[in-house]
Amino acid sequence: MAAALSSEDFTNLQLLLKAPSKDAVRDVCVQSHGALNRRLTENTAATFSIPAAQAAQLVQSLHSLSHHVLFHNLTSPDQILAVFPESFHSNLKNLITKILLENSPAWRTEALSHQVSLPQLKELDWRVDLVTGSDSVSRMAVPTCLVQLKMEDPCPSAGGEPVSTVTVELSRESLDTILDGLGRIRDQLAVVAGK
Amino acid sequence: MQLHFAKDVLPDSVGTDFQNLNKFNEQCVCVCVCVCVCVCVCAPQTDRFMQQLTEFAGEHGLSAGPLRNLMKSVLLVPQGALKKNLTTEQVKEDLLTLGLNEEKAAHFSSQWGQHYAALSRLAVGQTLMVNQLVDMEWKFGVTVGTSEIQKVGNIFLQLKLVVRKGNSTENVFMELTLPQFYNFLHEMERAKASSAARFGSQPDLLTDAHTLSLQLTGAMATSRAIRPGGGNNEAQRDANRCPPSAGGGGRPNRTEHATRSAPLAESSSREEEWEALAGIPHGTGPSEQVCPGTSLPNRAGEFHRSWCVNTREEEEEEGPN
Image (cartoon, rainbow over all chains, first blue to last red; front, side):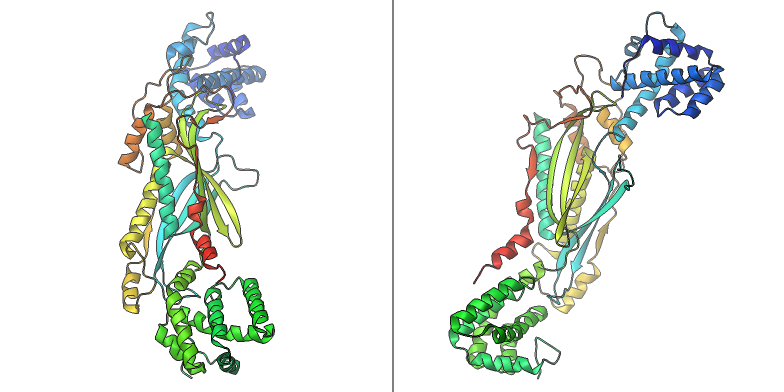
């Protein structure tokens, strides 16, 4: 969630001036975007030679900043620069802006792929069989279609499997009806797109 | 005794029952035959069968018990005939062999001839289907925003498949992105083309062994479907379509499209059409999904009526005769 940025956050960000190198700044920015953990705080404290408490605040502020940028879809340098207060160190501001711009597209993609959703269709396989006999009719030639759908749940419930497979059998009529339905969806999509 | 409809030796009671059937008058036999014909494929409907038998027994002053046993014997003939795809003449021959008199055998076999096609269709329709798809419901719309990203603008399609598992049904829910939907459609069309190409537009219920063996050699068509493009690629592409808004974010600068493994010419032109989609309302809070209801002729599609082909047809066919 994107929390609002406060002046305290920017004070914390100034701690980045203690970084040994630009790469260190980049690393901590990228790692802070994800879930925050103690190891990250410890590494940051060690790299920047700052107390753990300050490292924790720095990492939290970076997290807030990167999520703010992502939420509001700030994609131009000016937009991101505008977030910082006037008094903020100019070079650091530019560096952070550059890092955020570089990583935003990847972060956005990742956020979209992990968004709340029903199980996503991942794979679709099918097979057409000819049924040649059954207990009620010993000779026949009836085609039937088996479709296997593999779905992945992005947010599985505790103890639940994220990947589930469903195999469904369709008669010819069912297959025709399904295609009618899908065709209707396609037509409706075209109508909406045309408007 | 050489019979067409059964290879095994029948118990003596069957012969006796058919002899008894000779004693019925014409009308009784007609009704018997009708009951047989409509019941012989309805194995699960024994209650209905019993009810009709009891009524029949009452109307004609017969006792239900012996009548039931007699009917069981009589039913062996149409059931066997259906299984072995017998002709009218063969059925008549068998009835005569079993001891039924000429007149009744002729009547029975002519009824058989008349209803044979419908009965075959019903029997085929009752063929075991594992996880049969009973219904499909869908809706599609636009994701307006999420808790992570204020403005999204992706199209989603949600499907609910109703699958028959034994006596109950199970609902399977899933979500597809637009490219996945086109891929799904494409694969289903291929499956249909595959079954139509091999088996013609109207499947023959009965083929002789020779034709059958020819079909078997080419019968199994399979497909390893192209995986829908990975989530990252689609999301990136969809992200590029985020429309401009009054307040903060403009269009991202990227214009290249991530490559996909499923080169569907159809879908890329559709995506260009979708690029023009505008007027997505602002999302103001956590994940909101809005179906652009005003522009869509139908918000949700539901056509389970056309799905229940097998069950509905059977119900209609089972109507009392």
